[in-house]
Length: 92
Image (tube, rainbow, N blue to C red; front, side, top):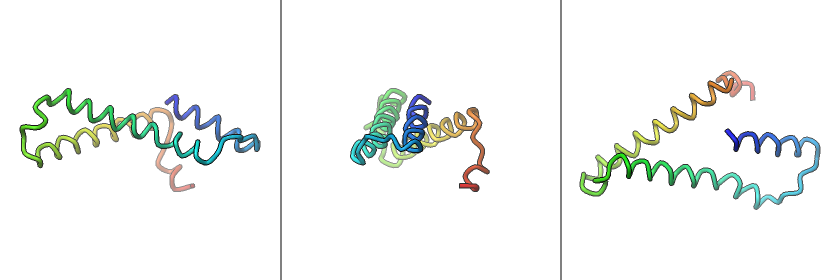
């Protein structure tokens, strides 16, 4: 949620034509949260299933997909709780 507030302030600076950051900064600003969340998901999977390396590969893949689906569902639930609706995507 804090990341979205920072994005909103950056958008307002763009609208006011007061942007002083480079495109490289924005690329890193975009990618760092993805990397952090990926590490969190992998660490959570390691915590939930400490025997990660003993099951077959398909079981490990299934567990990883379950973690990612749960994370995506939590993200959508948070967006919905903050007032985002699907019709806003159609209007864009």
